Length: 282
Image 1 (spheres, rainbow, N blue to C red):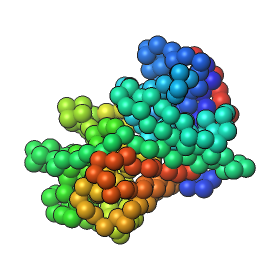
Image 2: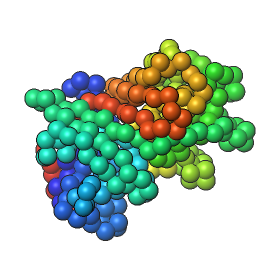
Image 3: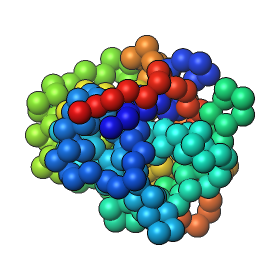
């Protein structure tokens, strides 16, 4: 099958989080999709097939299927725009229906997804203690304006807001220990952030549950964070920008638009770039 490789949330002609994109007439069986995702080796590969009034979509990390992946959805939007032309495409995920808008202007690709509904809840003290130990942090490292929380937008993310950019840059953890904690708590990513201003954030997103040390751009976590900031009544003024991947040498930029309606979908947008032409995967 043909696998397109597209970096989502690219910063111009560089950076972004690579995703595999497979457009097919019918979805293969789960074992085949899992094997292809493992062979591609990106944090996620998305598979999409036309259905009656939408595209049926499934996402696979190298080691596990996930219900929603933001950067792979942006990559899918770019792929659909190249195939179908500019438009808004309805996507049926495992548990919810969302949309992605894809546009192509010359060689420039952009996409914007509407996330699943959002919700958040405070993280319990035991989880906070374990997460701080995992990352070698003390309680004093946390930004008290944004308390640790489980934020959801299609998947659960543990938000840990740090009080300095230096602490964020120094992030380290043991992948195996992170995977154990993430599996036990069903955590999609650990969303470590630094608030550089009311509308500007720096982020790092370990993804150990998928066997990935860190993602350079994470649309699902961006949507979850935006929803959590809305729940906190943070002064976001309707939008935030997230810089991610700089500490990995893979600069990425994500935009999130936030309405005032509690729990409503978040619009997450960014650029996309082709890594190289589609290739065959067994």
